[in-house]
Length: 246
Image (tube, rainbow, N blue to C red; front, side, top):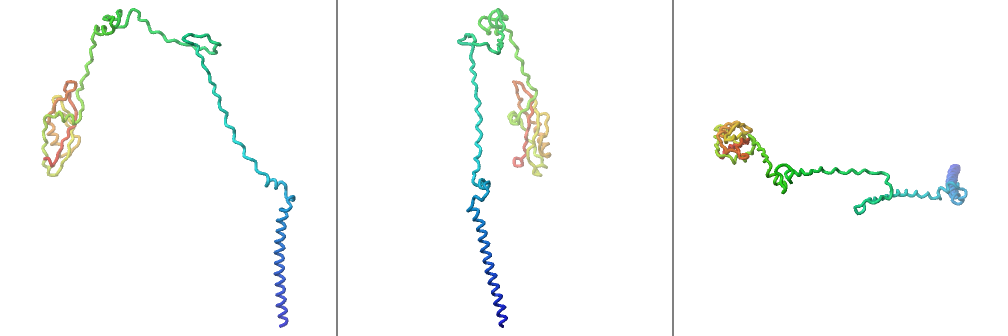
C-alpha cells in the first residue's frame, strides 16, 4: 500500500510540473512575439528607408486636361467695287487675274420690216394700230375636227338611265323548285340604234343564265350621244332573280 501511494504521488507531481512548464512556455512565446512586433514600432530607424518613403510619399496628381484647340481665324476679304455711282473708277493696284466679261448679243434689228401683223412694212394686212388688223386681215386657220370614237365604255348606272324597254325574264320552273336565286351579270354592247349586241355571261347560276340572256336581248336603249353623234357603248347588265319577287 505504501508503495502504491508513492507511485500515485509521483505521477501527480509529474503532471503538475508538465502543466506549469506548458504555461510558462506559452507565456514565454507570447512575450517573444510581442517584443518582435513592438521593436519595429519603437525603433523606426531600423526600417528600410525605401519602404518608409513608399508609405509616406503621396502619389502624384493626375495630368491636366489637354488645352482646347485654337479657334481658326476667319479672314474677311473685303471686295471693293470698281464702279462708283455708275462710273468706273481707276483701280488702286493692278489685279493679278483679269476676268473676261462676255456680253450678250443684241437682238437682230428688224429695221423697216416691222413685226408681222403689226406696223406697216410687215406682212400684208398689217396696220399701225397693232396686231389686231393683221389677224383680221389674215387667212382664217381651219380648226381640226376631233374624231368621235366608234365605241366607248360606260358604267351600268349610265346605261340604266338610257333604258326605255325592259323585259322581265321568266323564272325557270326547275330553279324555282330548287329554291335557286341570285344575280346574273352580263357583258353587253349597245349599238348606235339602242339594240343589244354581243351579249356574254360574266357570272351567275347556270340554271338562271339562259333566261336572263333571253330577256336582255329584247331590251332597248336610247342612243348614247358623244359630241352630238350616237356611238356604241359597252356596259354590264345585272339581272336579279328573287323568289320573294316572283
